Amino acid sequence: MDTRFTGVIPPVVTPFTVQGEIDLESLDKLIDVLIEGGVTGLFSMGSTSEVAYLTDAQRDVVVGRTVERVAGRVPVLVGAIDTTAGRVVEQARRAAALGADAIVSTCPFYALNSEAEYAAHFRAVAASVDLPLFAYDVPVRLGGKKLSRDLLVGLGSEGVLAGVKDSSGDDVAFRRLVMANEDAGHPLALLTGHELVVDGMLLLGADGVVPGYGNVEPRAYRDLWDAAVAGDWARARRIQDEIARNFECVFAVTGRSGDATGVGAFKTAMAALGTIATATMAFPVEPLEPANAQAVLAVLRKNGLL
Image (cartoon, rainbow, N blue to C red; front, side, top):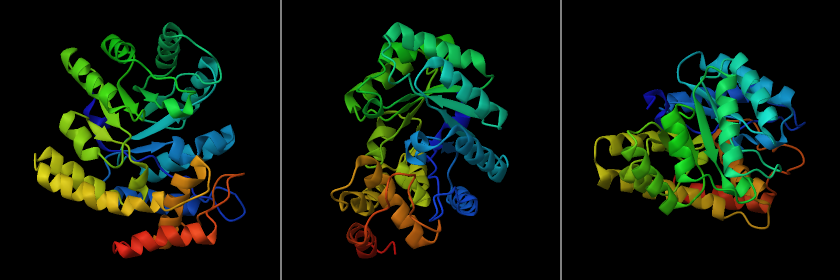
């Protein structure tokens, strides 16, 4: 297992100006806040980055600026997410040219492929760049497609995959993946996309966490990780409980799309904390209206974060 890709690796929010342009000054500040908060890596161009809404040119701008600002302080993982293997290969090569340290790829979506074709897809992506490749298992974004344990561990044992970013929400499947990975000699770095049960996932054997809410409270996740590494599970649970109380700000949002709810709550909180300048979302997603924004902030005020 490549130990560079363990610990706390938040998926970095993409800030926008009120005019809808990428806000590079806010991106710089966010990156510094995250690194100063103790994260061990950054994941650019994931779901929390609103990657699906960005043009290739915008993706390149964000990735290039992220790599430049990070300046080697932590590894930068970059999502190569597209509809077919050929398009993902192109995205991976662009990210590699911009200085990515690893690539994170979904299986193709819209295209209707078999599991054997998924394997061919990941092999093609891995062969296209001289970088570690992570599989991004996120069925909710891929028409319910779930990458199987045998596929992932098999590709890890082949040296095709360096790890998995698991956002399936299927804890039974993740437990089985952890056990199979261990039985195979631990070829894969297994990263959980959970935010509310990270303590449990680390206890059962996850190698790290990729928490969207980490954009709001990076230090809390680092403290949780440190407690887990030290085997202080009581402290880890206390920190996780504190995170969960603040994460209630996401559940306070009502009547909005899935894309607007989570990232909208994060951005609203981040703007209030001064981490980014505005809570603007990628077009055509509107920022949270005043009632929802106030509901988000009320949770954070109640818990002393604001």
